[in-house]
Length: 551
Ligand code: DGJ
View 1: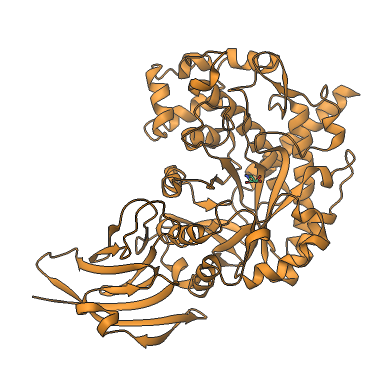
View 2: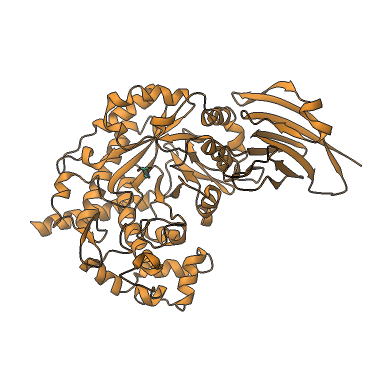
């Protein structure tokens, strides 16, 4: 009986994988990703889409009543997309019996509020631990085993090295996606799925259960070796370095191929354990990749994963979730989980711009599912749409901090009115952005025929709590649209340094239905000496400038 059930499950997964592979070409009638030059766009109902989003706190969607007053607030704050949790424990309270009440409530109320949603599958893992698997799993750790640390102690985290764990998750996720196809396949309220939440193991650099030890001391799987060889020269530098330092071997154990980490079990937090992290990344990727593939076989919309990113203070893997899709191991994830389309940073803390750069390596599209929703978050939202052709910006805990008169709601309002222009300029090098969120008081970028310098005129020092920011769109040879706050902008020639550049016309204005509606014509004190465009510190505004040259 047990063998029969095992066989049935394996056949189900094999079928799911075959169907998913057969479906790798996106169905253009449902939400899907599409390349536009260097950018990747999310296409919804035939048009590219910018997700001006916010993520709800973890337990919010479990009560429809609790959510009732929140939906209209989100719409009033100019959000068009809500990231909302669907939890395994409520979806499958008894094994094999699915309850879609939470999902159906989200669909109904989102539609009534004119919102789209991205659903977060809180399945096997949440913030590096396992808290959302149903109780019938939690209470049966023989059938659904946990990770062990080096001392053999079980940690509250499902091991990736269990087919039972993986198959149970894949079955529940597939049921959810089947339901979404039936309930939303024609309406497209749900745009994308987040598979799991912040994977990786905490409090140990790797799984030391007997199954994990066997796998760690065994050979690196052929699929991974083939991927590394096929991508040699294009791998992310840290992984490439580890492989190179161990001699670019084409087979061997994990320690032979990636090197033996310097380890110290009494003081493990002080060491790098990169080989252990690579091993964990592969095992999480295989597991989550198969869960995602089982879901895609039912309903093939884009799927991403979010990451608890390594902060400078947390040195060893295990102090941050070891094996999650950090940029340093993103290649391992690409190899192990082809059904995942995007890897995302949860950017709550510092170095926002650096993390965005790290997560756009190897052509990974930028989707920020969690960040700050304050004035700094507002500046970062504008910046990622201009600088990185981002698909989504989403502060965490939006049910607690959305307001109609905040810097974020202002940015979302302006970006939503000019979304067609922004989307049209993605991927072709005609759009960029600057944010002064570190110590610098100015930055210069080249765009089109001009160098553009943005200067922070208030020149404050110390922590930046409301960073000046500008998004630039080059709309013609001498013609720019700029959205900004707290900056003066200066143009110089990028083609002939002996040309003087001056402002020809400057209009303040707004976009309505994608059309420019001019307001004040700016001159005199508002554009000193024909040279400086001024964007006040109080709020975000849009200006349209044309330039001329003289000698
Ligand atoms: C990151 C997680 O992904 C979220 O679900 C939430 O727990 C936040 N941390 C809390 O800050």
